[in-house]
Image (cartoon, rainbow, N blue to C red):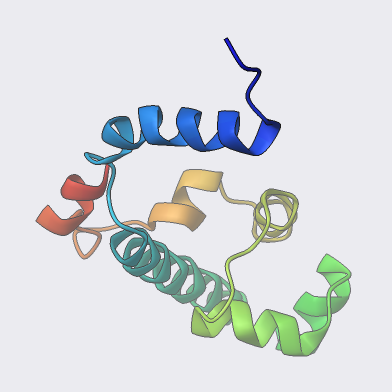
Amino acid sequence: MPRRSLKESQRLRAAELEPLYASEPSNEKIDAYMLARCKIIGRNVRLERKKRKITIDTLSESLELSASYVGLLERGDRCPSLKSVFRLCEVFDVKPNELLLGKGPDVIISENDANIR
């Protein structure tokens, strides 16, 4: 039996695994989900900052991040790293789930969210 090249072996493995990924959500769904989550996190960061009457500049200094990046986080244009989430929690004295999910009845997990999980 002739020996297969590395590329040929990789292609065969990819072809074997392809049916397993057919049930996975599309990248578009994941991107939409992540964008929605980033918007929620950003809204919560802004609410916590305003509740404490902290400026973006003061918050950015506390987090050791640039003010423009904090603005991007608040608008939901960027998602914070795990390290930034924990720093935000320390500054605001909140639990991570309060920052990531928010509080109150306006935090609803939609049917679309359930389809992605």
